[in-house]
Length: 469
Image (tube, rainbow, N blue to C red; front, side, top):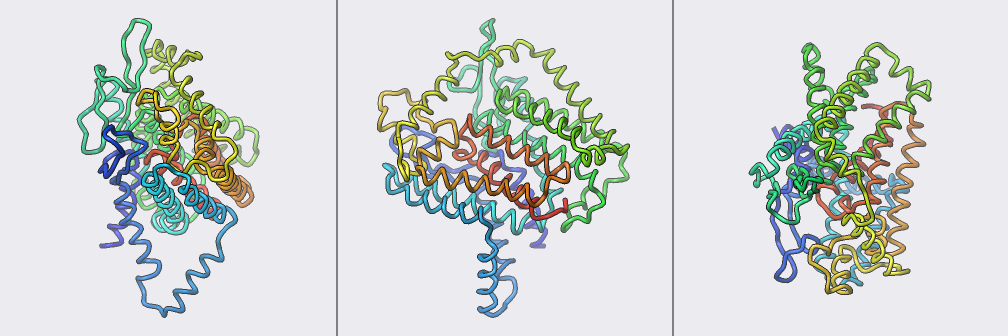
């Protein structure tokens, strides 16, 4: 009973990543600011319960001698990889940076969040993905993406929220200010979709992950079906092998997912998806072992189906919403999004050479202190995760963070040698997230974005340690 409960709670966590359901515990002053507040999310509670399961099953489910438990812990520490030491250094530097913070409450909260996501990463690598399987994990994300897509499409056609406040859906309406939107030449206001996330870019990132999940489920897992699964990772798939309509239904859901992804009108993320899609196609044609994998009758059929559905959705969406696309593709120096990103980048560099920065989670507080006459909506983190890490945790923070990422990617390439298409594909996906990080702060400051980043880090490390999908 408890094993099933743990399994379904894990799948629920992956499904619930986009939910904004939370309890705001504290914020400074009389005016609420998202970036100087303390909240606990539904997904925090889910992960805490799963963490207790992990702790119990790893150390408390049996009653070995204390000496045996100590040996188990010692062995885990000795097996630490180089990149994990840099993660610990990053955690330590971030903690030390709090001494420079003007708002220690927010900084300590943000450090605890960083610790939580680091533990989430270790949980995935060392326990969850081994126990629950990679296939079913991607399936849960794909189903979550379909759910968000339905909500997003309804929001797009209604141009307002759907009333799912209990899931954290934002109140959106054309009459409200501060909503992510743009205007057509006719003066008509077009609201971008949110799903149950706090911003269209956050929804786009989760749908980007859900799109990869589809490619894994529909294509990559079929190409390597000769492998024996971990745990029960193929149980769901094998039960439905006799259903002839399953693949067709999956492709329909892919079309819905892609349509919703486009309605976010997230320029950078949609461009990254398209570029990474094309890059995979080019590399597959260049590498002989990839061509052999996709050269089977079933492989060619599935690739053609994906290309056909993608082409149809892109053509239909472009035909009906050409003017909207044209407006979003028109970028000028006077675009507020561009101006604000440039402003935040310049401000973050004014901190100069600093070993420990202004304190983790304190960029907004530092900005408010140094630029007290700005409109309230402008007090946001710098829209670049690397500049954000540098400004808040200093030179030591950004060095340890970047080296951590470099060593993870290096370890992945050396261990897998990118022999299988899904290994290359997920590396391209992960590097796409790092590229998006140059233009947004969501991977470090927003619950949903952080879960996507650290979850992807966990999957990348897990794949590098296992040849089984």
